[in-house]
Image 1: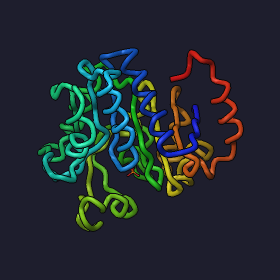
Image 2: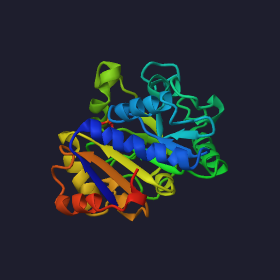
Image 3: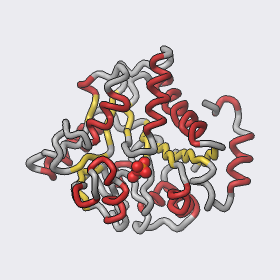
Image 4: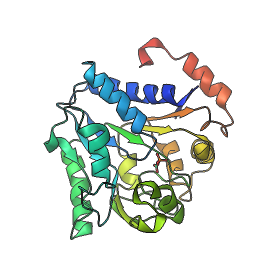
Length: 260
Ligand code: PGA
């Protein structure tokens, strides 16, 4: 795992956006896996700016989002589809036909989940998967105890996640308790995982993910087994990591051809 520690949230956002930019510039028809939550908002803002400056063309790219609430209409202001429209899709030149989302209103959830997996395969697999991390170590909405081999399916959110996601809904009891999420195995099949985390609330989960034991109790820890995984954090989220001197040394000595 490559661990990049940036002095500020803004610099960490920019580094993450640059990795996404490099992916799309190298392969315009990239298949991107995208994440929601408060953390990636600044990354999406940086991508929109790059697009407006003419550095990023999304016209051939396609996207698959990690997750969606069950029972929410896609037009609901708290749906993740609406989140993505507001922060990215409404501001760049992605073709609507190339945008994919789990359908929170699917009548037959298992069949829909199988179809989502099939659509990822038909697109050629995900080239670059952007990830956040929950305070209890979820990736997507794969909460603690999720099978580390799981595929896209329905999951029940933890109380912590209901609290963390309450802002848009007004209170934790109004947050849907169920979601459809790509599985841990689905995420592990992507070619490059790019996790972005900021703030002290994430420090413990980040340290356990990168330096702790691999366990379903912290599903993100399976990323230690991913062949190409980049973690970008600010100083606050890096606070509990033990080997920061080494990570900084590696980054400072990165060959120019590997830099974004
Ligand atoms: P957050 O969510 O960015 O809102 O903290 C991250 C996540 O749950 O993956």
